[in-house]
Amino acid sequence: MREEKIIKGIKKRNEKALKIFIDTYGPVMKASIYKVLTFNENIRMEVLNDSVLAVWDNIDSFDPKRSSFKNWCAGVARYKAIDALRKEIRHKSVDFDEVENYIEDEAEIYLDETDEILKVLDEKDREIFRKLFIEGYSYDDLAKIYNLSKPALYNRVARGKKKIRKEIRDERCL
Picture 1: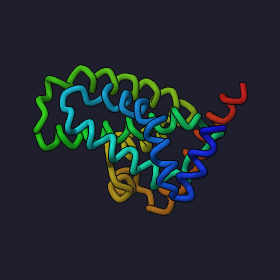
Picture 2: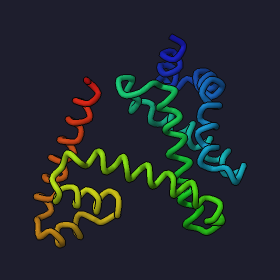
Picture 3: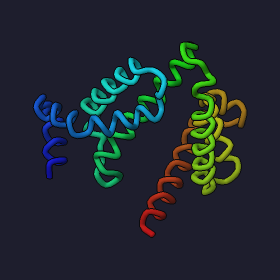
Picture 4: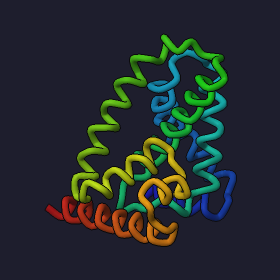
C-alpha cells in the first residue's frame, strides 16, 4: 500500500513523496550502484542522484506487471551505474584493471542471456540483432551488408522483436 502511495505521489510531483521514496528505496538503489561502482564515492553519489532523478522523470514507464517497484528502482540505478562506468572507462579516468573482472563477468552473463533470447530467431535474424544491438552497427550499415532496404530491415527487426516478446510472454505463463 505504501508503495502505491509513493508512486502516486511521484506521479503528482509531490516532493514529500520524493523524500519518502528516497528514504525507502535509496538504500536499495545505493546497493545496486555500489555493486557496479566500487571504486569512487563521488561518482556513486552522482549516479545515485541521477538515478533518483530518472525515477522521478520516468515514473510513468514503471509497469507493476513486469516487476516490483523496488526491483525497477534497483534496475534504474544499476543501468545508470553501468553507463557511468562506461563513461569513466571511455575517459580513462578509471584503471581498467579495477573493473576488468566485473566487466568480463557481466559480459559473459549478458551474452549467455542474449544467446538464449535470440534462439527463437532464424540464423540471419540472429546475426542482424547481434550486429545491431550488441556490436552497434547502424541500420544504414546493416542494410548495405545484407543488401536490404532500410524499411525492409526495420520490418525484419520489428518482426524479430515481436517474436522475442511473444516467446518471453509464453515462458512467463508456464
